[in-house]
Image (cartoon, rainbow, N blue to C red; front, top):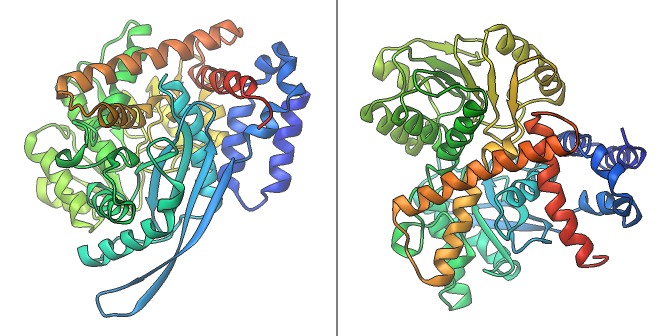
Length: 449
C-alpha cells in the first residue's frame, strides 16, 4: 500500500476510534487508491486524501416535539455536509434510533463517491436523527418533521444542500419536511428536497429507482460474462423500497427474487416475489410500520426462518439490500459455497471488509460495490432536481431511460478505471478510483479549501 494512503488511514483510525463504520469505509475506499496516488504525487503534495476524509462541516442540533399525550420529547438531529466540490451537497436523511455522527460520516463519505459516479453535478452529504418513526402516529411524525426542519432549514437550499429520504424517511416525511421549509422560507423552492410527491415536484419512478438501477447494473455485469438475467434466481435482503424495486424489475426481465427479509428473519418463496399481489403486499408491509416479514409468510404460505439471514440459500445472484454490515465472513463463505457467481451490494456498506476481501479473492466470483450498484436512487434524485429547476415533468419512460444509461455508464467507467490501473475487471476498486478521480480533479482546481 502507498505510504501516504497508509498514513491517512491510520490517522482516521486514531482520530475516530468510536466510529467503526466510518473507519471501515475509509479503509475500503482508500486501499483501492494506492496505484492512483503512486501515479499522481500532486495528490499527496496537496494532502488531498487527508482533506477528503474530513467533512466540510457537521451540524448537530436539538429537536424538541410533543407526542400525542402532550409530553415533550427530545431527539438529536444531524447533517454532515461531506464534500461539495462537484456541486450542492446531496444525500438522504435517516430517522432511526441507531443514527449517530459516525454512521452519518461513513454514509456521507460513501455518498461523495457514489454521487461522483452518476456523472451529475452533486456533492456528498448525509443526515438524520435518532428518532424512531415506528409506532408513531401521523401527527407525531408531522410534529417531529416540523421541529427537525425548523432547526435545519437555514443550512440547506437548492444550490446549497438538497436532502432526500432514506431509512425511516419516505414520501410522508418528505412532505411534512417540505411543508415546514416552505412555511419558514415563504418561497416555493421545491428543489430543496427530493423524493417529493408527484403533485409538488416529485419524479416518476423515484421510489423504485435504487432497485431498478441495481438490476440495470447487474445486467451490464451479466453481459460482460456473456450471461443473461432471464431465468436467474436472486436472494435479496430487506423488504423496503429498494428490495421492492429489485423484485419488480427482476420479474419484468424474467428473473425471480426468492428471498426477502426483515429484522427477525427471512422468507423463502420458491415461486418468486413476482406477482402484482405479492409486490403490492410488500408496499402494505412497508406502510404498516409493523416490520414483520412473517406477515408475508403467513399471507402466501411460504416458510419463515426466524433469526436467520438468507445467505447461503440456493440462488444464482445475491443482492444484500437492507442495511450496513449484514454480511460477515461466515456469511460470505456460505455465499461462495452455494455455487453463486455474482454478489451485488445494494444497501450501503452491507459487507464487512473481511468478508468483502474474501469474496474478491475467489477466482471467477464477481463482486459489485454498493456505491456503484445503488447509485440509481441518488441519480434519479438529481434528475428530479433538474426537473424542478427547469419547471418540467418528465415521463416515466424518459426518467427510466436516463436511469438505464446512467447505470450502464457507471459499470463502464468502473471497469475502465480498474483496467487503466492494471487491476483487471475489479468493479470494487474501479468504482472507488472512478469516483475519486472526478472529485480529486475538482478539489485541486478549486485550490486549498
